[in-house]
Length: 115
Image 1 (tube, rainbow, N blue to C red):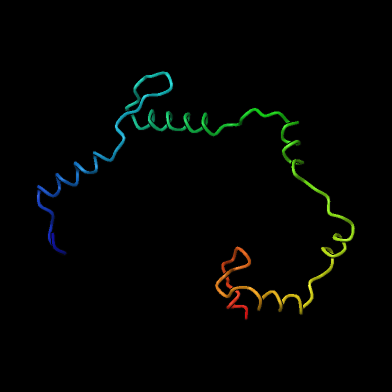
Image 2: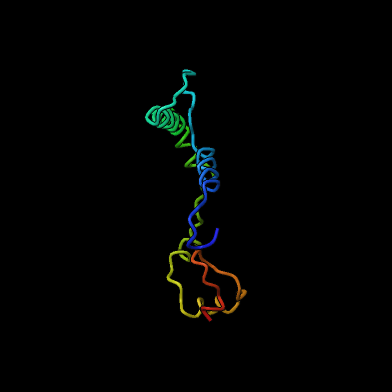
């Protein structure tokens, strides 16, 4: 079909058939009953999503155990080093020492840009 042409009956029937083949006509709800109305299909979908992504029961003690797993304390001499502000000289050294096509952060800006 060219621009400005009106679609033929054949093309209209093809488009309608394609559209109907992509539509959901019916679904089975959780009880196995067929739902054929739009409201019934939507209600079945909402119920499914609520059930699938609803709250889950967890043991609160397990959450605390997972939060504390693998945590280590930093030795006293290192705490002082980590607490110091970064100097301009240290920053320059890191920028020029790294590969130019690598981005040190999640912003995607490479070191070549910073140079």
